[in-house]
Image (cartoon, rainbow, N blue to C red):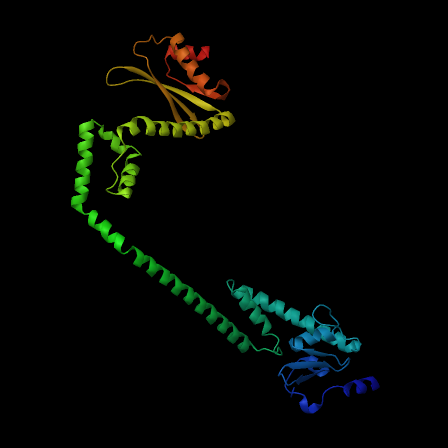
Length: 336
């Protein structure tokens, strides 16, 4: 008792102590609550005279219960007080657990933030009330909304600038895209097809529309390629592009193998043609077409044709060979 009296003399006077009437937390029986000139609350232990700023009375219970982690332990607290506070904390944990289970059963879609708010309401002695926390949260949400509005305004300004910079161009395009201009373009293409005897099926080519779009993208200044470019330069460039594609397929042949297909057919001129194609996981490749109208389609002739294609692909890369069901084709396949 002498020790307690000597310690209590160092504690601030009762005149500066806040009124603690009506506070039901047992920790208030062992702490003094004071408010300094900076309006911050200070909690002073009655046993060890240590003072702590902030954290609420709930944090002070860990000091009395000598539970490390949140606050330093009190070395002068009596055993019966320490046991009482520990039991109170255990009961609080059980209440929190029961409340969480009840909330999970009733509201499966409740967010974690709302669950934490309901858990904190169990302790009525917290320094900040529920209303204060909700007000803070509302202010934070308002600030976030204001930031989002500012971002949307900046995006709107950028869009308006883009529209202003492009307002003249769409009007020019719309003038040239009238029905009469489209009709003149169609007539010009039709005359070219008729004069050059281009098959009508050429319009179904996958390269037709990209070519038209490319010309339209350049505009009226495009005069088209010359005869020499089409016959020499552009032909060589397309051939290099095709060689590059086939070489990319060759790596797939070595890894996964391929199938050679021989398709014999007769065209409108009654010519007997044999098309050789190669299929692999990367895609289908046309190898060559042989005019076999004047050739005797026996096993030896077919064998030499097949052998050339197999050598070009690579014998180790061929997994299957698909041909017609005629006897000569079967015998040529056995020779291979």
